[in-house]
Image 1 (cartoon, rainbow, N blue to C red):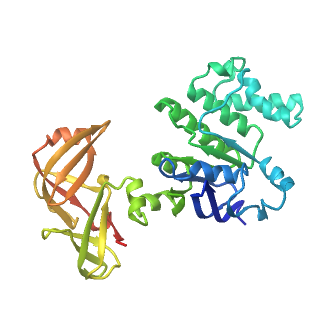
Image 2: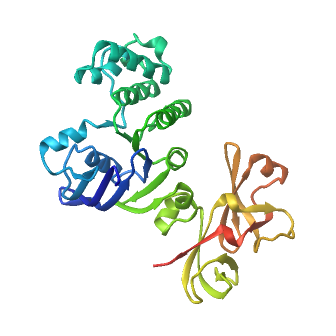
Image 3: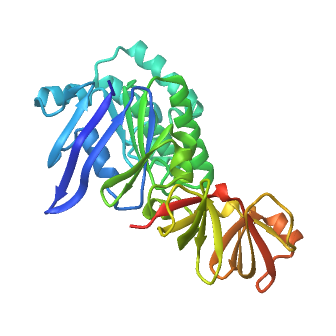
Length: 360
């Protein structure tokens, strides 16, 4: 039995559909990430799961029990959960008192409070600053305190809404390390919302993609990012190359896709000849060379570089091959090959690197 389950969950505000037919199961001890663009409904779904508001229709079950059973039942369920909102809230007291407040509200004994808060302070690396006023903290420090205040009560479910939004890179690392520590040291079930796709991959065992109020795909992070189920998901998870075409041949599971202008892309696909499809190729799966080479890769296209953009240790290379391709290479490789606008290169990728989507 899943710890949390939603069935046909819908929510409307002012007659507008915010969530539509959300069917979700989260197992005990699982870390589940909701990814999706801003405005997709992630925060609304977390608020419903935390029972802060009731859905327009549908059901929420906690260990098989319907949250709509009674107000008393909902209160009991809420005491087993903790919710950390996007913008961290800290009280005008010491860091220690901020973390301890939930335990005091629950009537915990002083010795128990001291032990639990001390352990959490070590976890968030703020033991030496426990008497510091929390209002003086940086955004990243305040978020760590907010998460610590939530986890010190040892909830069965921890809900996190964009836990690293608007934080600097170093603070993001520290908050993610804290979440990872919670995953490893507690039996907490974590449901987190994030628009950071890489963060979802790093922290979660499963990912759900929420777009326009619907979970359009859910599964293992690797599956979601390499095998998107539709064009919307592919665009959101960062597939730079989506090439429309028609399957003109098929043999033993290998199809030939006419991408226009007699450009043929070979891919692994079960779709039949005549099918209108979209060939998806991740930019990191494309190899660039200055001369045509002998390789097992079935796809190799001569093209002209139309743009080079540096992105930290990587370079993003845009190429006109009769259709647009984007490749990601290391900055060092780009410099060694002297890749620049106007230069001709061969773009090569395997048939297995092509994910074929059927066009609606």
